[in-house]
Length: 429
Ligand code: CMC
Image (cartoon, rainbow, N blue to C red; front, top):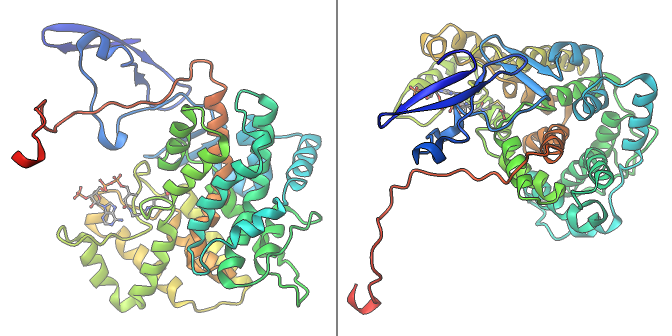
């Protein structure tokens, strides 16, 4: 391999393949013509060595623990910015001016209500439905309620659909929560900022005055910033693949939400908190560490490990600080779950199994403790992740749709099934 091209020897034939270089990060070998030239596909289950697209949105250096949105380090955005500013940045590519920010906030705020008929649509779900089941269904149903923004070839409709999803996701997530606890839906209040409004829609009841705690609102806003995008992860790739067929954006985001639900992805925050509760006390930690290391035991330390980060997840560091801020604000001095988490992290980080496999705490390790302290039930954790990731999914979907070279995504396979054979009538089988 040299310079801007690489060579591959296949069956005595030499195939030249261009090397493409990005602005930072690993270069890629362009194998687009490999099949035409060799009759062979590449094979990479789990896509560990495959770049599926070109993107200008988010950059991760997993070895160094770096995460950049449009070039800006996550630490700086989480410290100085707010979630809607991050949304603007991800969608538009630049930080907004004060006037652009005010206009963006205004437009998002004016889209926060959902069609009144959606409230009746919710009544179709079982009372005990998981909020993520309700989210997947209701986000998909938005394409039925907002079909005036489903024409993906119209830039104006794309923009309206994007604003609608960013604005309405908190309303839908709060409705999913209220529905499962049997309380009336709370309408959005446009005098509040995005995250305060969400807290109010979740925790206010008609019988009482509700005052948003600004420390909790700021902490949750930061959690949203941390979850806003993460390059080509499983759910984002799902959104892109669904969108590559020309499906409408609401359907694509519903597909991404379904993918996020899995415990190896966004469902890990719920699973991590359940695990901490199951461990229960610091004395039980060695038993669970042993289980995690046992090859014959499927148990994994939830909230540990990451496909890309082979170093501390930079989001986990900010999350840990946020956890302490929230617990302090709420006057929770001794949270047994936090004690278990801190000790588990300490032991795992000094254990050779975790060191050798580069398994560090990820964002989901501390987020559950924080969200629980704020009053969210574990079943809501992944819905909050979906709310925050919506902007990333939309930014990635828009980038793909606006790329003139975009084609339907269609991976191939290594077929290992039966070779061609003749049909046997049922009486002769
Ligand atoms: N506990 C114990 N062992 C682990 C863990 C863990 N959490 N994670 C990975 N390993 C081991 C695994 O058994 C394997 O060992 P070996 O090489 O001996 O077979 C090795 O580490 C590599 O694991 P892998 O499954 O091949 O790695 P992956 O890149 O396919 O999976 C992961 C990444 C995040 C799915 C995995 O680390 C995991 O299941 N972690 C727990 C779930 C979790 O916290 N997920 C949240 C990810 S961050 C938020 C998000 O992206 O949504």
